[in-house]
Image (cartoon, rainbow, N blue to C red; front, side, top):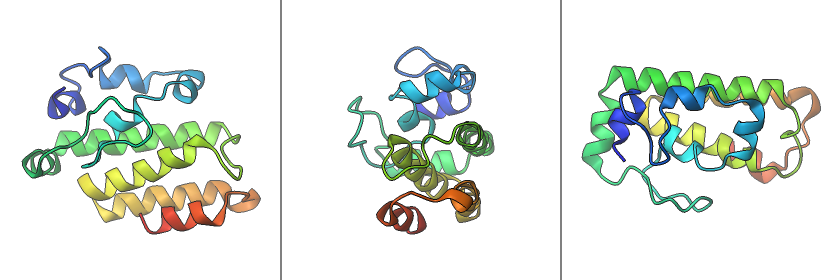
Length: 147
């Protein structure tokens, strides 16, 4: 899979989906599909949750992504898209939920590929969502804080 072309919406992912198609997922599709988050928010390490084997496997690839304005814009758009999913659904605001790992990945990907500012902005937005009814475990909250 070519991450640069996928993240600019020029090529499909390993499952035949354009980035824009993923952005059009219903809330049910977002919740029940477990292989998109790793490609929409790539990291420089393989996922321990989903084993499709796609990740940013070279410093040169990371550098190219960080220098591509369109990719950075799309990663930010993806973070806003995922945040809107979190805003529409509150069932993830519990002690344990798989969306907590997704939130961690978004923060880490933004920090790696876009900026600390965007990562912190997403993190603060998530905290605002749980502020009034926070039941998320302290370990997860600390993990987000330190991601």
